[in-house]
Image (cartoon, rainbow, N blue to C red; front, side, top):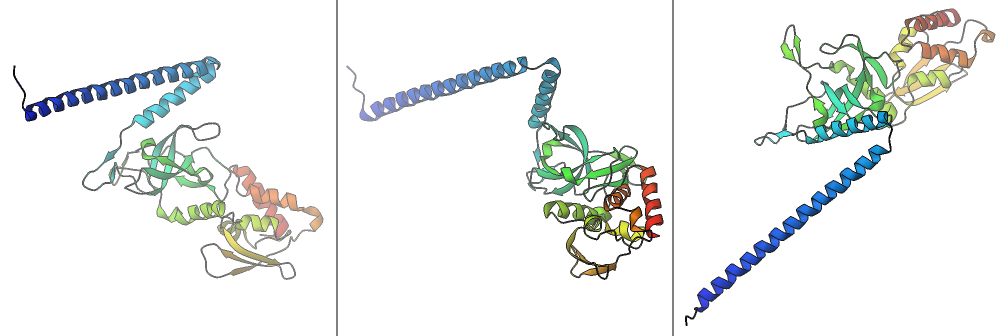
Length: 306
């Protein structure tokens, strides 16, 4: 009969414990894997049940949206190990393709968008959707003219729809510039203040100069359409209209001092003009239709002599 020494016995017991531990871990992993497989099967069945309750048109739409979302989510992101920065690099004022997958009135499908806020170390990007479809202009919806590298026609920024997205949704746009070669379409920095006016107006609920003239100054008007057009989409943080002197005191949100304007009354008799009639003509000055803009200019020339 052979007796094991204490060391050999302990070693044998340790080996057995490791073996049983490995077996237990394997069983747990197998159970977990089977549970995951069952979960996926149940979810697929649930998805099929949902689809079966839809008509063909909606069914196709839901499947398409789900596949687009999955493809975007599976897209890999590259981070440069040495710097920790995302690659490719995107910059503020750069136009990109943004792959939206929205519900209801949210943005859906690929659209051009302007990068407004971006951190090279973060996945989240603040973008302003754009459109080439002509729009009536507002403080937060306006044209930035033709952009090189984008389709022909004016590009409109829709600050009202500004949103944050993952970098996975973005795709570079490259075009051949006559002078600089292959490059990305960008917005000139000179538009920055105009964008700020729209963001501030929406965020702080500040009235635009246009709204103050439209609703707070009776039938009085700025003495000159050029002057009015330069002020109408400014966000106003303070204003006061003195009806006795027709003096409007106001301060633009990014200015430190108040400014004043003496408004003019209609030269025609007040019987020929009503507040709602004038309001409509003020809106026509921002119309996408050239004919309406022309009629509005004619109105202010006849009624106010400007």
